[in-house]
Image (cartoon, rainbow over all chains, first blue to last red; front, side, top):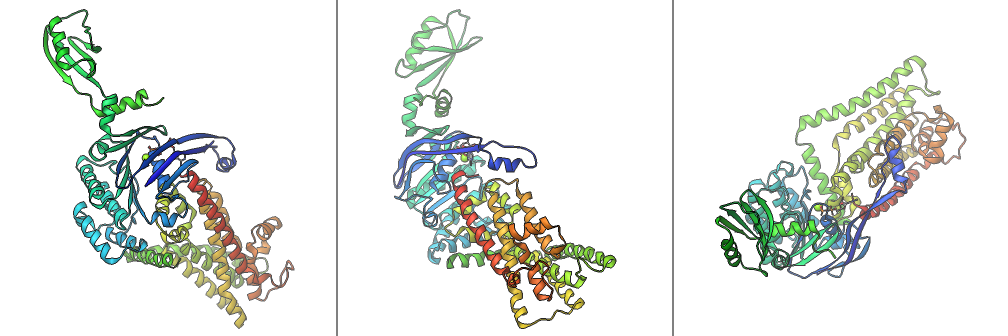
Length: 327
Length: 269
Ligand SMILES: Nc1ncnc2c1ncn2[C@@H]1O[C@H](COP(=O)(O)OP(=O)(O)O)[C@@H](O)[C@H]1O
Ligand SMILES: [Mg+2]
């Protein structure tokens, strides 16, 4: 459904001048630096998938979504959605997709939610019956009722996001793009949004591509994750596979009953030592937890111990920080 | 296009409703808007107390010119509100323009529909009042041809200044800081053509004749309406090119606007 090949977006940032005529100078200046917001990215998304696009701030997520929704023209590479180039014939293309940008609203600021939705019905030529049916569905699932008659400017962030999701789906798009749909929301609101996205994907068969910097979005929603950092695609696959590949380092924290000068042990490395507490790291492939504990208890008197399973969050953080996936 | 037009009317209706929701506030807005123009015109009228004429034109003749310009500029300001560079620049910075790109509708139509400032009626009404006041001071020999041509003059100015708004809005794709520079042309241009243009220094008048042909929008039509001789000996057709000048300015701005959109789609905001 989506084909992206060696996609690039490079921004030229003009040198900024100050002063009264500074803006005019900036306009005609030839000095610039290049920001490679998206740098040679390739992937495909099949119909019906729910794909997470994960990366820290400034990674290039929004820029990718903007190209996929036709807002930005790529500076290199290829990009086709259903065989179409999004920025060509913009109107025909956007009529078939839905998009929500987390920090912005597509609704009219001064209008009650319901009036915005009715305007969108006309803009997208949604037949009356279909509109009412969809609205009824979304109204229950997103609990829109309490604020349908409230002007958009008075909505909370969570309410606004729910209204925007409804607005993006009224015309039954095949494809839904979400840029940071849970940004700034509390845990309960996040969960509600996630449930809805899952529902739309499973029950309506809508293909969803969502960006996030929040790993739990991906963990709870997506079978497949694309990890991006500094414009480069680092990983494309399942989170589980990522965990087995990079997240193998478990930790054993031991409180020793007596001070020892040498606390090293075969099969594990000491990563921290403070008073009587020693932290070892080891991998599943090298040694099992019980064997390691056995070895330690032969040499030292142990007061207490705990095994810490590696968490995916730490894994992803390590991927960014240590650039594990780059070659 | 038809579809876009229907949506435009809907957007307009929605805005009018929300602007009229608070009647009293709206009323005061209109009063405030018309009183600025009233004061501006009153101070101009005071000049005539001392000098009787301005470049040989009486108060009534200048009021004719002034009223016609204010009326037209007000109509433009209302219809082209969405392109007002200071408003549009803000929309660009907030990223709202992206939302327009996401909708399956003609973009220009969407910007027209994005804002419609009804309280400009204050300015329009005041311009009309000054124009009518002029009729009480001087006797204009109206002929059917003159009456027929009058709306075209208004139309020319609306198109021309609308074009300037669109050009100014387009520039905000590149930089929001030059709005001030752009305002010099729109509001400054409006001010200039509200006065008899032969009073200006030669270089300024030439600038607004050959570079920005605003002299043909109001001054030349006024010469025709008031049966005044042309001090610059232009061909006899000069008073009648106003609508053409307006349309050409608007078309040129729209071309620039479409170029700007393409630029925006390659750079974002
Ligand atoms: N319109 C633009 N002009 C210049 N640089 C931009 C523009 N949009 C984004 N960038 C830069 O590109 C990089 C990626 O931005 P973005 O795609 O917004 O990241 P993310 O959404 O992952 O946080 C950042 O360094 C950002 O500053
Ligand atoms: Mg972003």
